[in-house]
Each structure stands twice: as structure tokens, then as C-alpha cells.
Length: 601
Image (cartoon, rainbow, N blue to C red; front, side, top):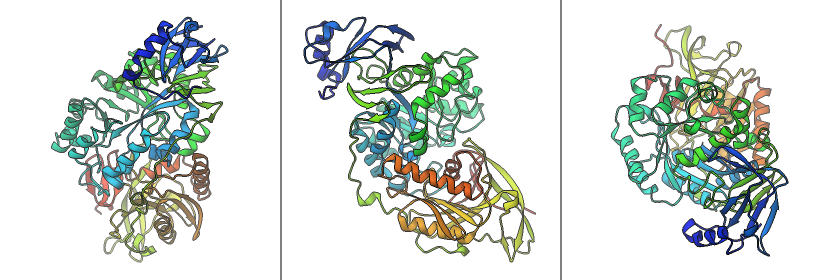
């Protein structure tokens, strides 16, 4: 494939016209295939493609006039040509990888464009962290656009982050070359109540002519939802049922349907198209959160498209939802998302539109992967010391820090318990009758009630907030700790043994962040994430192997929950109902307020 550098359309326009007219030879011609035209939703057998300066110059029945003596000719051998796949909403940090590592993992799966929201690192390092993610993203051989995070903290007054994002930060970021819009507006109560800071961030984005991402994590589709839509978000990925998808598109929003490592929200929403017959143009596919194991073993956007097809979606419609619909939403339909003249030459060769094997991936006119293997480098930043060593506990923790003191004189208590819901982001607000021993409230492994603690790790306050959680099924003496704790990214520790909880927390302080599992006083799994306590610079395969060992360690401790690690990492996400934990206490997300751990007797 030609090493001719990728150029912008103004830089390449004259040559594109000359190639299409046959006056100059193309860098590359692909022939002998079937072109999937997502603009018209049809398969054009025998259509050929000519590429120059990393862009499509000619797309038509015969590109013979574009071939010169130095033109590379790729024989498609009857395979389909489809546009490179686009992920409309995702967080790179959820893969435990840097942008370079993430790109390396997903390019062989056919993802050539990503719209990323680095709000995880924003909570730890603020605007500087966002700039680091943005700058490394801009180095990649595929298209990685960055959305400026909107909510750090995600719910002011309910959590404390390492840094806060201001409207001024948003306005500054809108001037950066790779910023495509504002990341998901998670503080939906703030928008509904016309909070000046939230509206100022939205205004700064709209003044810049860019897209505002949505996040309405409430089942209430009444007045509050309409108020949120009036506040400016252009899309939303938090829908979990058909009614959610329909409500969003009726309000002029794009319904983003996600299939991540733990979110299975496509099947329940795509019926709005497949059964109700709604116009599919306003439906988009995305991943939101994919951990490294999913990327290595299952795929990325190719996995989502296959799943949508398996749910009854026409393959061409599913491809539109992962290409042109996404590009159009972000105002980039003249730049990417289809195989058409002038667009970036992002194209996949595949032998089947249903099973979607990714046999060759071309990005910006250059082959970047063949038969599942990457063929290019993904450049990385030299991450500074300020991005490392971000776990500050303030002191060595002991079992006593995880004791839950009972109300005076109580022999039993009714405790509020965070209830994990398998494969769903929301939790349930449960209660449990728990025994008191020597003034201390214990969990109840027989009833699947473990302890949970949030350990402050940004400012070294030594603070620990304790509570209870159900759904993991842990038995014996164990603890699991993680500095990946959406969205404020303190440290979440879940366990049945306070001694092991202390050991696990101290271990992450020692290694600078990550995930660890202890059982009977011994570490049985560790995933080191030294960059902001969120990411590793190791290859995805290595991180995935460590993550798999972590999953196996959780299972060895009795956990049978699907995607249990993802559920663990969301227990502090104080913008999704019903019950969460933060550094300020137990949070009732339905009421958006701190609540007591124990119910009144």
C-alpha cells in the first residue's frame, strides 16, 4: 500500500479530481468486489474504488482509467467493501489501555473511527489528563476524535474528584484540533434544573458549533426528560428498552444503542427499528465500555454489528448504524462513514456481511491490518510523572478502617444494601437484616451481603466510607480492590474480610493503582494500571491475560456474576440509580442525596 501521506480535502482536492477524471493515476485501486453503499443502502456488484492521498477519488463501475504504472491494485476476489466502522461513544480508559494501546487492539477488528470521552482521566488529572489523551489520540493511524468531558464531578455535592472541570476548561478545549464536542452530560438533574455551570458548558460547545453528548440515566420519560432534551444534548446512550429509544428520537436526539463488555442494550432497543419500523437514520451503535479481554477475544464494533444483525436487524441497516449514521451525527458525513469520493479512505474487505470476518482493514488509504494482525505502528506519548503515582492513601490502612459501627445499643440493624444488577448499569436499593457483634455490623455471606468501602485516593485524606453490597456471591475470606471506580475514581474495595480489604487497599497504594484480589491474606491476582490508576502501557494481550486472571480469581472467591469486574467498577457511579457509594457517603441516586446506611428502627 502506498506510503503517500494522508492529506486534508483542501490539500488533495485538485489531485482527487484529476484521478477521478483519469488525468492522474491513483495510489491504489480496489477491484473485483461488491461495494456496500451505505448512502443508498445497496450492494453494487463489481464497483471499483480509486484512492489518492488517503482519500477516495473515484467510486464507480470501472476504475481502469485511474490505474498507472505505479498504482497498487488490490483484488477483492468477490469480497464486500464496507466502510471502516465507527464507535460513536466510548471510553478508552475502560480498556485499561492508553489511546495507542487501544488503537492497536481494535484496528484489526475494523474500527477506523472512535469518538471518545476521556472523563475517567479528567476526574483524576483534570484538563491536563484530557490533553494527554487528546494528544496521543491525534498520533494514531486511525481517526480518534475526543469529546471534552463535561462532568467532573459527575454529580456536584455528592462526590469529590481529583480535579473539577469548569466551563472555562470546556471553552479552551473546544479550540483543540481533535475535540469534536462535549462528552456525555451526566449531571442530568443539573440540566433539568437549569444549573448555570452545566448550561454554560453546553453553550460553549454550541457556540463552537460542536455536538453535546447526552446521558439521561432515568426511567422517567415525563417532564424531566423533556426538560433535559431542551437543554441541548444531541444523543443518549443510556436507553435500556424500546420506549427509551423511541422517546429519544422523537425529541430529535440520536439513540445510541450500546453493546459493551457489560452493557447489553441493543437487543431491547433495536425493535424500535426492526418491529416498530422507525426511521433507522437516527439510531447509532456504540460500545461505551469495553475491557481488554473483550477487545482481544471478542472484538469491538464488528462485535456490535454482528450482534445487531443477530437481533434481527438488516445487515445493511446495521452497517449504516455503525458508519454513516455516526458520521452524520458528528457533522463528518463529508469526511468519513461511507465509501464515496472525497472521504477518508477507510474501508474493510470482508467475505460475509452477517458473520463479518475482518480480512483487510485500510485506513486513510493505507493497509493497517490483515487477517486479524495489525500492520502499522500506533505511536505513543512519553507519559509524564504527573500521570503516574496518583494513588495517595495518606496512611497505611488497617482492618479497623473497614469496621462499620452499629447504632448504640443495637443487636441487629436494617442496613441499606447496593444491589448489583447483572449486565445492567443501574443498581437496586435493597435492605438486609444484619447482626451486630461487639458493636460492629458484619456482612452476611450466606445472604450474599458483602462489605463495600470507598477509599479516598486523590488527596491522601485517609478517608474510608463503608457500606454493604449484594450480588457478587463471594464466600470465604477475600477482598477485591480497584482504583477504576467510575467516575470519581477513588478506590472501591469489596470483601468479606476486613483484614483482606486493608491488604488489598494498601497493595494498590504500593503499585500506583490497578486491580487486586486477595484471599485468606494472600494476593491471587493483580492488574497494574500505573497511568492515573486507570491504564497500562502494556499490550492489550498482556493486560487481557492479567484481567482474565483477575476474573478467575473473583470466581475462585465464589463470584458467578457475568462481567463482575465491570459491575464492581461502577459501584461509585453516582449518576445512575438507585444506590451508590461515594467519598461523601451512601448516595440515593433516585433522590440525588446522601442517605444514612441504617434505616430507623
